[in-house]
Image (cartoon, rainbow, N blue to C red; front, side, top):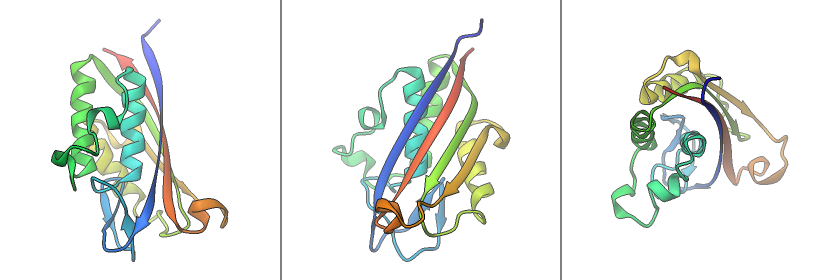
Length: 160
């Protein structure tokens, strides 16, 4: 039987004035970005946590603490590349990743393929191994009130 593991990641960031909105490794035109120590790419953060969880390597806070000035404003796609490097170093490969953004606005459909491409490239896999979906909460909760964005991710890794 192959050595496979599932990882689950989840993240939430509040909207903030004066910041670019970066989701899935791309910048999207919007009146507000997300608050965070890095570029606050909530989707990539959830994906990194899913991968790190599947490897039993902790979470992004352990690897890239928000108390470390080295990570201030850093691109989350760069951090994803580092997680991909750790994955290879530890003898794992990504079989599949599926992600979900939860937000009212902006609409994601026009950006979906670019997000998939950016994350797949950072992971060194084909785009067909990375899924991106988006949903609203129909006005309910923090995402429905447009206070922030939530994201979740699930991955399947295989020991090579």
